[in-house]
Amino acid sequence: MNNQRWRIALACGAVLAWIANVTASARGQSSPAQQLPPAASASAVAAPLPVSPGDAGDPLSSTGAEAALNQFLGTNIAPIDLFSAFRLIGEQNPQVLIAQQRVIESLALRQLAAAQFLPNLNAGSSVDSHRGVLQRSSGVILDVNRDSLYAGAGAFAVGAGTPNIPGVVLTGNVAVWVYDYLVAEQEVDRRGFAGDAVVQDRLLAAAVGYVELLRAEELHKIAEQTRDDAKEVARLTANYARTGEGRKADADRAATELYRREALVIQTAADIGSASAQLARVLHLDPLLRLHPLDEHVLPKSIVPEPVTLPELLTIALLNRPELKERHAAICQALARLDQARWLPFSPTVFLDVSAGTFGGGSSIVDQPVGSGTDALGDPRFGLFDPRQDFDAAAYWTILNLGVGNKALIDAARSRLRSANLEQVVVLDRIRAEVAAAYARTHARYAQIRIGEMAIQSALDGFQEDLRRIISHEGLPLELINSLRLLGRAREQYLNSILDYNRAQFELYVAIGKPPADVLIRPVTRSPVMQAPPSPETMPPAPAPPVNGQAPATPPG
Image (cartoon, rainbow, N blue to C red; front, side, top):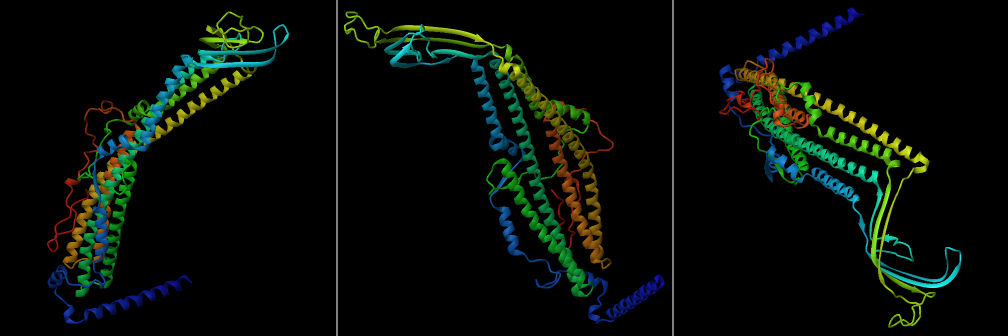
């Protein structure tokens, strides 16, 4: 069975080879007008031919789309640089402003906690009027009408007792006063560190948004440059097809590649709009603005020096990350609450009050004697108003719920302390992972920059060689199209490697807590592995080749 299948396959191959030979012979016997000398064919292909837009292999006609695209990219342009973006983050980013208001709130709460050591002041007046029976302490029931009036510091003075609302009063538990203030103090620190973390996060978001906007604009330039190269390839293959020196299928393939490049130009333009809107959201700007980065060249930017090792970076992060400082403040708060719960049964609740004012009145039992005053007629009425002063002091200790309540408070505070410690461990693990990941990304992106430089050089040489072979009638259009695609990918990869390196540098700098510059200073050394990063300005010019008087294109950036 297997031998029979092999015989059938060989027979089919022989038939196909015969058909190919017959087709080649028929093309070789075509009219003399189609058999041009090599020199004449090369000049005919190099010269532009008037073609109609409907023919296969023509460059895509997209005048309306390009006009709309140019209008979109050229309206409401707002130039911006990275430092301006950082300044706007501190001035008008809503999340940063919210964090600042939370700090201000914590300062007010700390002031309130400190003010608990000061007494309250009460001033007012009260009237007491009684009609009916009363019982004396001896048990005697009296039918009495009684009236009194008090005015001064305090209120609600009735009978012989001290005013129920003192004029100056200080009351509370000493442990609650002390530890509430300590907790409020730590809350100010905690919210301050949380605000620093928000600022760092927003600054990183602004840096990443700026890098992505720069990436979108440079990718758009690369897409336009590759599109122009594809137009030249499509023109050459179309002329070859018209003169009979090439196949129509090759021209169609080149035209398809051109259409793809035109669509990619539109997509990269949309990416510019998306990146601009994203950066405007981070900076709290009008989304109608089309932000435009001021960087003229895309260059590698090193923030964290390469000689700083990963263990050193981890140590710097542990000392500078605001998230860890925030967790430390939260642990201090939990410790203060635990101490407060432990001291609460032994801490007295104090009560101090002072009242002073004018008090007077009368009753139906004790009348004003006749002649004691100009209006003294022996009837019950308000009278005999004289100053009065009251002072009270008390201190007492409380055991909540026979001690069960105090034990529950201590257990709850201890549990919150353990949770705060575990949350610190979670944050610590996350920070170490962020530093290690950012460190690995920076070194990987750094190495990719050199590789991308060599890839662009080799892709450029290959494209120019294939283009020369096509013009000289030595190569196939398919080879030129493949070289064009490789060159476009090399340009994009080189650009992405530089911008990814810059982004990784920002991420690493934020991951270690934005330490001062003197913390990162190291002696200048040259690593044999990691050499100075290449600059796009040193790159050779990218194609298109000088065909029909066209000037060479420039590299990305």
